[in-house]
Length: 386
Image 1: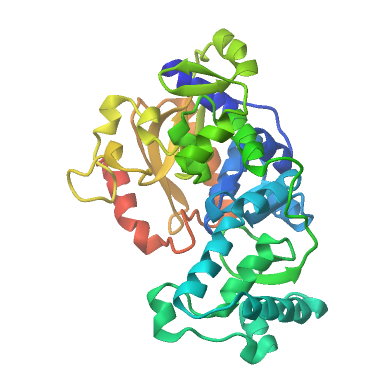
Image 2: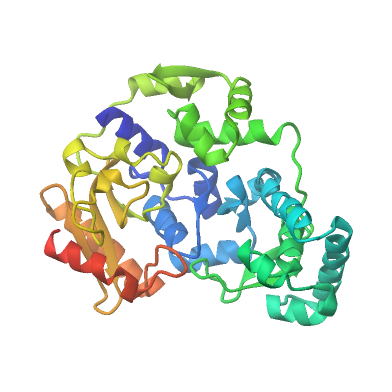
């Protein structure tokens, strides 16, 4: 496991890789989940030392962008993968439309007409959802109580989702930052199809970023059915490393020669960083004794290893989770709990991210609704060593 973890860390660019642009990092290590939190900023800082202003500039010039993609979820993608991201994410809005047609009396013609009106409304520049609603008028209708029961407020989100999937519009962060969820929409002309099979292309990328990984791991990331996932990976030149873990054949020799670094390589990343989320198999990154630790902020007896996702942000060393952390904006400091003896290198790693969080981000949220109040129990447990 030490070698596997160190290899995953190496492939994820968390082992002292040379500096690179935001787009280059995403190409090499994978798309980054956002959910209105600080994960992309933390991930790009850990991998390439990129400051927030540099990341925001990359967003502004469209070398990277947040788009609905794998599983219909929003990820930050490099420009070279915009079309692929849209192609593999198109099933989610199409599914929403099908559900609305079945249960709420919506027709495809109605949504197409609304979508055309949305595109026309954006002719003079970006608009927020309220501005779009005013512009399209009665073409956007409420679903009332029936819609609320199904999590659908009106026809407008359906139209916006389909237009995004087709690359006809895109969301623009109101203040240019990725760690919030206030958007305007603007016209776009982005192809949403790729040469070849989009599912196979996604698998090719996934196994470059995440291998060795299992069929189960790939299914989690892609949301493909078992039959589809098996068919797709059969198109790839994969070898079995051990048990059910698969790896591209051209990486197998490199892995065989790989030796875990002898010295610690600490990195502070988000709880949804790719080192975890590409597999979503938390125990593989935990030593058994650490898996049985009490999870900060959870009820007594709830262990870290029993969770699908980490309770806090992560401190990793050569791929092993060696601690948890949260940022306290009221004090401008990081509260953390280490699973290993704290040495000068770990203190320096914490201090570096602490200064970045304080000076560049102002706060480090796990997701859009995360707040100082909601994370207070976790911070208290981290400070108390629980």
